[in-house]
View 1 (spheres, rainbow, N blue to C red):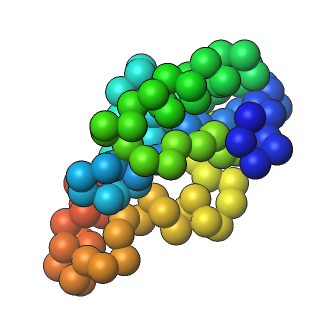
View 2 (view 1 turned 135 degrees about the vertical axis):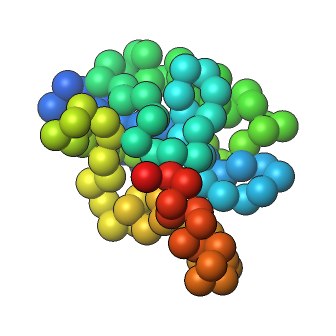
Length: 109
């Protein structure tokens, strides 16, 4: 597991990476990638998470630097970040202008 984190029902995780072509953050969902972190697949089983991470790593033509990170199940059942770094990453690239950032945030609500 990455960074010493082992998912469990009490502390689930999500797999995140950066899109190889665009550079923005993406999250794994059903063996593909989404730019919406609330659509990420939550992993509660270590073995399943390890297999999914190996699958993510094998997609080197699509993403770069995939890793498993701790998340929590929100009130709506969707994943939410538990660490400020992941909260920051989900707001999109910091090189966007104000208009681009507003458009990005509106499209990932």
